[in-house]
Amino acid sequence: MRFTPLVVLLILISLLSACKGDYDKNKAIQKKKYDSSINEVIKLENEKLANESKPEIKRNDTGVVVYNKGELIWLLYKVESKEVKSTYLKKDDKYILLDATKASDRIDEAKEEYIENLGKK
Image (cartoon, rainbow, N blue to C red; front, top):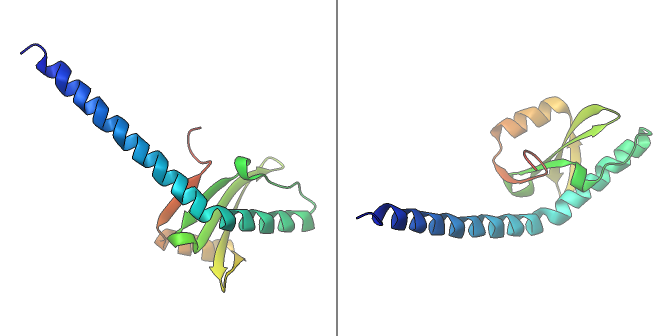
């Protein structure tokens, strides 16, 4: 009888450990799936920043959210001490920058598929 809580605890820990492995595997699959799209959008954003004479952003310093299976990609980063949000829409196999109001409306209705560099690190 005294060992029952200990056995239950060990079983729960084993189950939770197995679930974490599935989460990590799924996240790696999602990253690979959206990798080229994210790189394309960051390249477009860097071109926009270059035209504005602002420094480039790096992917590992940029928050990324992919919505609706890659239809929308939202970037969040800081440049010159200001927080910047940019949203790109996939149209005819290319990404175009949306203005803030259209982006906000679309994001409100969209489903998150993949998140990178946001939250606790």
